[in-house]
Image (tube, rainbow, N blue to C red):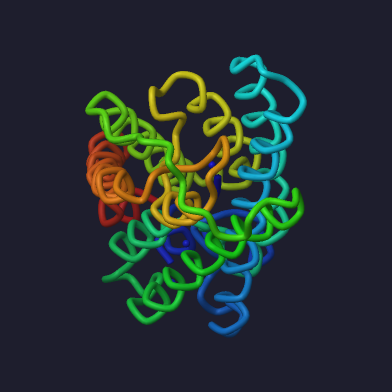
Length: 260
């Protein structure tokens, strides 16, 4: 809903400064310990979901106009996501999203990028953070701490929306990486997610961890647990499509490095 990687980013056409606030992550030589990075992923994903769910609750309490509710929800998400990427990018790369983590690992698996051990630690931290963020948002607004959402999102057109939203997110993040413009990630990724709230039928979850977390709240931003597998499956499909588009438009990392 933002973000984000010798990483493919650091070994591309030019290494990124170690304190660059952007995903994929800082250069390997400067990476903080894995425990600290996992904590950043947990806290960042929790904060992101708290923003999404909390602003949704606030919006529905202030107005019954669904358009205004979505406007409030998307605006808060844009600002919250941009701030979180800028803040935590130097620590973990600010993925906050398993598909970004998996894409980062896939691209960098043969070039010393994000390792499988990192990915195996990042993803549970993101999921735990997402659940915690939903519970925290409900607590802040006096809602039942855990109440399964009844918001069904299983329709086929919504699933298509998730493929489009996720493919666009992966294309944006790794396209910026290929062109050495990840310094734009806080603004670019947040802006993309804000736009995708409106131009995709699913309102752009584009994140398996966030999808799981939002199942724990029966509020405006929730998703029925039975709808979660379909969304997650389409997000994974979208990630593959996004990576294919990156390779088509910007070349493979091997090609990119040879031209650098």
